[in-house]
Length: 70
Image (cartoon, rainbow, N blue to C red; front, side, top):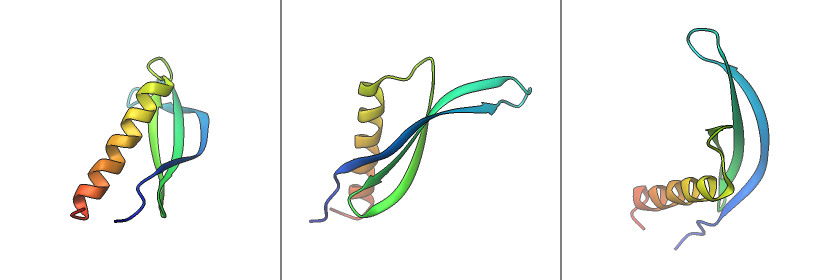
């Protein structure tokens, strides 16, 4: 079985724009799952929490494991 440990590479604030040109504040998390990646997941700044981010990244790792049939 492969290693599916989530490892955070970095987390930085990011400013993007929506379709109407309004500024959106986000947190961009770059991470690896075992030897795979890097992957990027963005969270809105208002809704960001460490617990939410960890759960989302762990769910991604689970989906990756399922995709590979493990």
